[in-house]
Image (cartoon, rainbow, N blue to C red; front, side, top):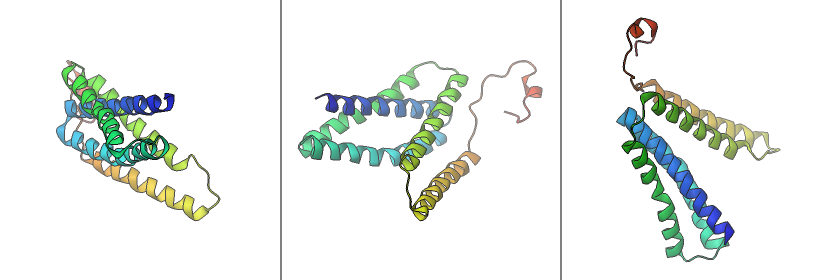
Length: 164
């Protein structure tokens, strides 16, 4: 059905882009990449459970068939990572991919948490608190990050106040 194709193809490309971000992170710094993998797993678990629920409950798939569809679409994470790892991309492009990936995660978090209004102020305050905890956690991870280093140009060291 059209719904099945949109679910599986959408999940395939979603996972592929996650792989692109992870591959870009490995191009930059393995420590950063493992942190991005942890964040990715954190957002993929509820996503894949929801897909599984839709496949089994709404579309009537068996557990085995639903798991097979989820595994097939999930393998695209590795495909995205392989594409980026084998491509010769510049450090600037790597930085742009990482910035886009970070924006993508923030967008997903805010849309999923704040898209449905609530009349319960306590519930809304809890959502903001959870979002703040996540943002602070990401900020603390970034305190320990290292930049990807582009080759220095003549005179570039004096122009870079951060010493990168």
